[in-house]
Picture 1 (cartoon, rainbow, N blue to C red):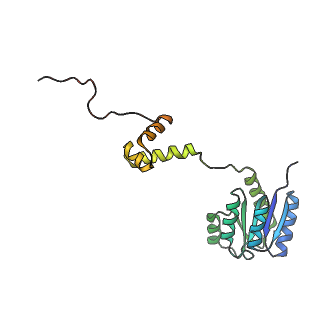
Picture 2: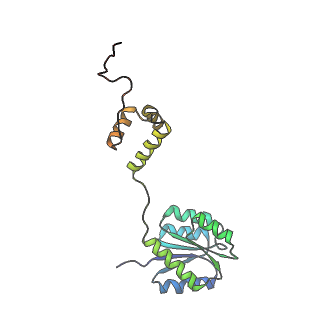
Picture 3: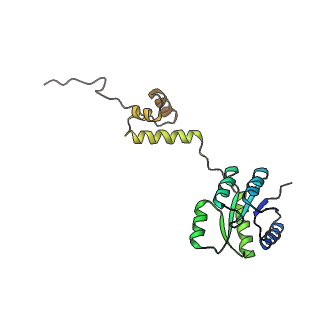
Length: 191
């Protein structure tokens, strides 16, 4: 049996709490309600939340709370709720990493749509961490570019031996040995 998604609401306003309870019930979710920053982060540490809704007045520092939540899990969607919202504040919130920014008093349809979208993003979350091999390839390519193609200088920039760099280049299939100086079998020209 699949677990119900858990929602965290950090808000002291009873109207918001009631509205969120109704929406959570309609979406078959569990709702946990707290009233401040410390309680929100404490619950995040203990639970498996899909979404957190933070009221800007109840949470002393929403950006700090967002950072604490994202440090626990990048998958958790976070919606900021604020009275007297402004376009500038909404832009700042979204740029900071909030999933959505809603103005209070909340419109039930807009809130339900926002929660539904956030739950959908949570379910479809795909980690975007590059592999160590991808990072190594990228570092080698950047070092070669910064060294102007000079492999010895690139090895120095990477703090690895030139033999290690040559081995890595062969391993990744982008090694081409270019000889410096005259060819082995150069013919001598006679005047």
